[in-house]
Length: 86
View 1 (cartoon, rainbow, N blue to C red):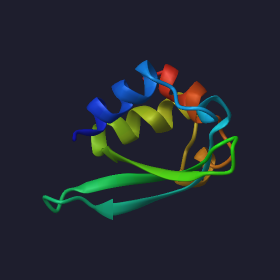
View 2: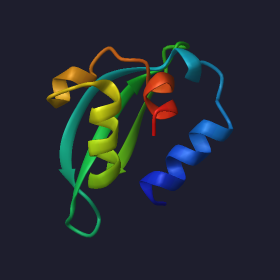
View 3: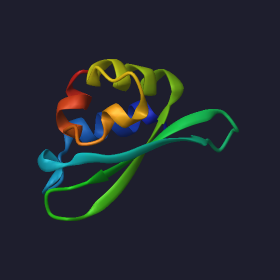
View 4: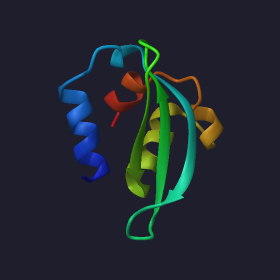
């Protein structure tokens, strides 16, 4: 599943507790094809944890939406607010 498809699914069908999800961490990882991807770790309002993998283009868009100069700038931000900007 592409990062954009995954984001579209999250935007269309929020799961319980998703509106309260915040970015807990982010790191650059190798994707299945060897290309760099951004792995964003989330903590949801209900205490559950999840991760989203984003392609490089979407990752840069996310950083711009967050007004973040580095990955650390994503930590603590509302996931719902960030993806609304994509």
